[in-house]
Image 1 (cartoon, rainbow, N blue to C red):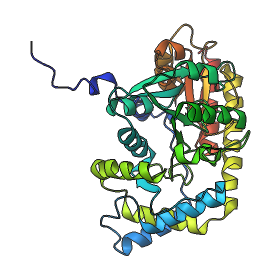
Image 2 (cartoon, rainbow, N blue to C red; image 1 turned 135 degrees about the vertical axis):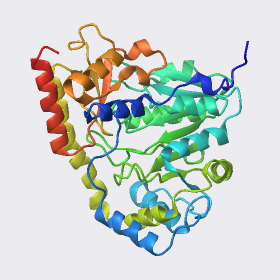
Image 3 (cartoon, one colour; image 1 turned 30 degrees about the vertical axis):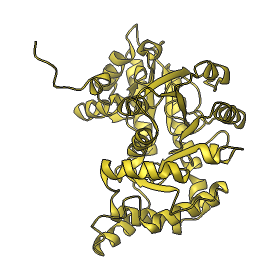
Image 4 (tube, rainbow, N blue to C red; image 1 turned 180 degrees about the vertical axis):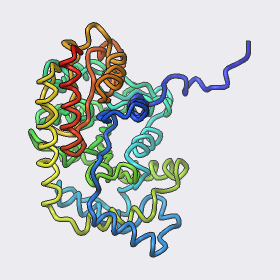
Length: 391
């Protein structure tokens, strides 16, 4: 028997279902509500700054862990937004997107056999990141029906091998913004059991119900929280790949070393542009994001409900999980998603991709509403026609 040429590690996960659905959407000229990238332009200030940096020949390697200008701008932003004092020289890493940031953090923190707690449903990268680091992802369901953080459920899954807990708020895919009491519960678990909190805060400025609170601001958490974020969602530049990490200095040293050998550094001219945006845009810009995405949410969610999807109103981020039970005629989430692309011309993501046990998400799909209002209106019209034809 010929031995496999593929590592056991790589064999434990497959390609991204989200990005697969984008390819399917393109093949059928469908409205892509699967992958979370905007179809509207980034702020002119940002684009012009990037062009100036390129014309000024900012084309070579930046400092591996981020340009001094961007790290300084980021430190000022954390102070303004959260009252967090961050040392730009010792506590910040700039990465090739938040995706690389999360992978670098996992590789820097975990040894083979370590365990990391991951709330479920989850963004699809967290499990593979743990596996790549040799760690074991331990999935803990959020509490139905409101998908709340259940401290007892998490406490029961903690073992001597548990090193960290991942928390994504505002949350992809659920749209939850975890409350102060939920975050207090996470902080208590971390303090009691000596855990590190890895917080994915990439949607930090996109909220509608409740306020985004950074776990690092809670008592005893500044020195045990690693914050992952980036420019993608805040500035509508998902393809620029400028991610950020804020962490205690000892963790930052390890993350920088891993990041160095993963990607060397994030794109130099784009770092300059993001820095200029942070230096120039005032609080009104960040405050406006929630209102703008609320308007988009309030086009899509009522439209979904009108045609028969069951969904709760997202509190943050720009996704909605929708129950397909009344429309799928017995089909599972994968079959229904592909049918929706081909027959309705609208692409979602199968809900099973956000669960460790796929059957738990077979009745769900996820839609992204980071699109122009006209795009969302067209998607709603297509879904309505699909529904009238008998779905």
